[in-house]
Length: 212
Image (cartoon, rainbow, N blue to C red; front, side, top):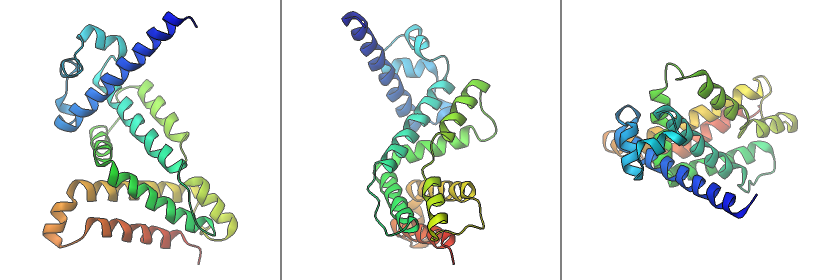
């Protein structure tokens, strides 16, 4: 690739990043239903003609932001140094790691909740649906540890590994969203410590999947 082509590609990557960040900020401020392509072009400081060269719709940008956030979350988990004598103990450590990610990236967890709610009934197009599902299938944060635990005898084998992985992933993320978005209110109303609730939830999940 020639130097001018490399420069052009770098500019395109930079512009795409600017658009994604502009969309992410607006989605968090206004919810997905309240943002227009005009809003994003104005926030990013580009014309709508330029914006449409990169993204054709709000939906494309929303999925781009969602995949970007989940990719970062999964990378954070994959790079974690897990400790424990068996897979169950390392699973516990992984859940603590994911809890740390949620606590240090509250807006990302909030966006995932907005995305799930906005697209709760259907996907906007077969193309975006296929891309998103392919991405999710390629990301197995919990399943490999569960399979390992079923082999080493630390995790129950009466429930399929993919079912346990889905249970852990969905319930832990739901609890994180609840505590991050409403933890301060729950603290006032119910006198609970949101961080303590997250840790207790981790213990509950680990206890459930442990082989008796």
